[in-house]
Image 1 (cartoon, rainbow, N blue to C red):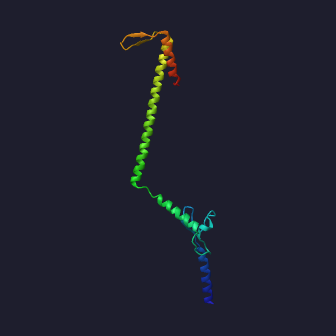
Image 2: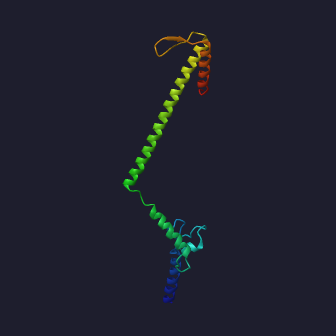
Image 3: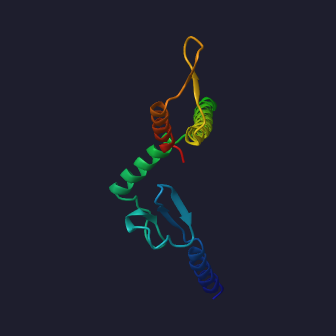
Length: 166
């Protein structure tokens, strides 16, 4: 009787312990093996489940092996960057930023020059429209005054120049 109790107790303990040691093994979408005492997510295909309680350990199918092998190869290609690669990447970003800053500075200077030229053209237009005598100096240093036709031509040129201004 004692043997029967011990044997039945051993069998019950073994059965309850076996369920406590239930373990699932599957390959996730990244190709990594996952070990758990809970079932894999419902989204895991059955061909990726390697082991589950009640089933013998089985290898995943060929497609899983190929998929995991290709994912392992992809992970191998994404090795941590070396110091020289990081320096090269940093220098490249720094050069790109310097080029952007230089371009922004040149654009800002060009806009400032354009505004200055527009202001000069507006001022010259006011002088031409005011009716004041406008004099120019020729190559010999002599002063020449603009005639009415020259004034109209200068006024037309200034209006063309101001068309590009805001």
